[in-house]
Image (cartoon, rainbow, N blue to C red):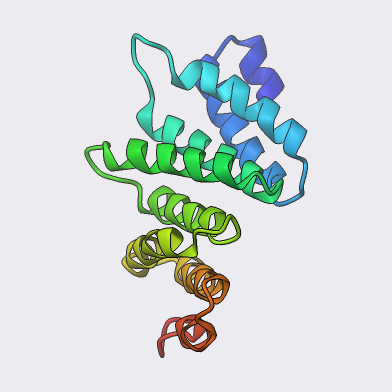
Length: 169
C-alpha cells in the first residue's frame, strides 16, 4: 500500500503507513528502518500549515522507544517527555500514547541513576493504562514500576508493584 500511496502522491496516507511501519519494525529491532519511517512520517506531520499533533506525539514516542532499546537513556527520556507534552496538549489526549510515553520515561530514568525521578512517570503510565479497555497496557506499566522500584533499591515494593489487581488479566 505504501507504493500505491506514493505513486498517487497521497502524502497523508504515506505518513500513516510509515507510522504503522515504524510500529511494526520497533519490536523486531530494526531500528534503522524504523528511524527512516519515523523521519518520513515526521516530514508530513510537522507541516507548519497544519501540524498533526497526535502523529507528532506518536513519532516522539517511537523515537524514545528506539533510544531506550539502544540504551541511550537521556535521549529516551527527553523524547518520551516530548511525546507526553504533545499528547497532553491535545484536546483529547490519546491514552495509549500517554501511557507508553510515561512508561518509556520511567524506564529511561531508572537505569540512568534516577529511579526516583522515573517513578512518577510509571505511576502516570499505570493511571492512564488502567482507564483503558486494553489489558496489555496496565500489566506493562506495573512491570515498569517494579523495574524502577528495583533499580532504586526497593525490592519489596517492586514485587508488590508487579502483582496484578484481581480481574485485570
